[in-house]
Image (cartoon, rainbow, N blue to C red; front, side, top):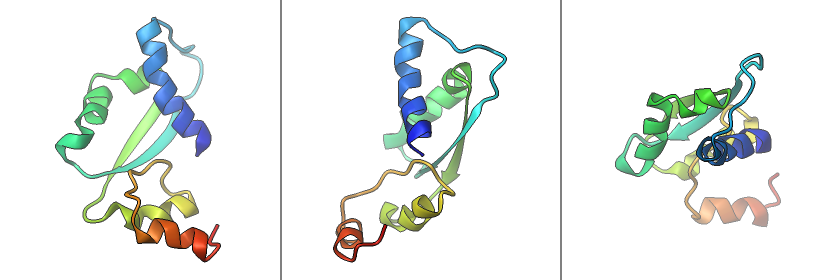
Length: 100
């Protein structure tokens, strides 16, 4: 998961610097859970323009609806790599209950 997050956000810096990965490298899959709203528009634009593909990232968006805090189990299982999480009670309860 950390590799995917680092690669996803590092990709923007590398593109801005004019760098690019080797074409021989297989793309790393990165699963992102997102609501389809204006807040996440830059990610969708980057996917459409191929910015992540240029960095050998295969970004796959899983549409979610409702509270993002419901994505914690999917993050824990590894079925998604990145999710926008609001800092609600569920987030803090996992530490209080020592759920890791």
